Image 1 (cartoon, rainbow, N blue to C red):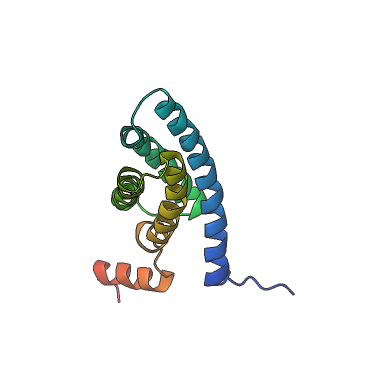
Image 2 (cartoon, helix red, strand yellow):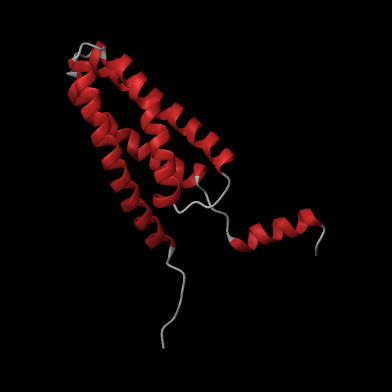
Length: 151
């Protein structure tokens, strides 16, 4: 006899992290290569980041929502939260470039490569617990019943 238990929270989180990592790897590898090409053409590192970041954000939303987190909620509200999460990711990234490149003199290529991983960790946690957060079915059903007058 087989049981059809729901996966544990730990297993669910681990699978989300793996899928998030795969999507992030593809999106960021492509973005990093374009970043290197654009800066090679003479665009400043911060201007290149500013131009390319929104493209990766929009592309990543649909992949992360459906594939990484299996989100089935409303796009409008989650897209707004996703955008807010990326504002903080962008500020982290620019802050790293400013401090590590402009003040401390590290090469922008290495700093941007490191920033990918720092911002990725920050965003995973923000996506999981804020952007694509799912509510337990019992709480969701109880809330729906309470707002519809059903007891």
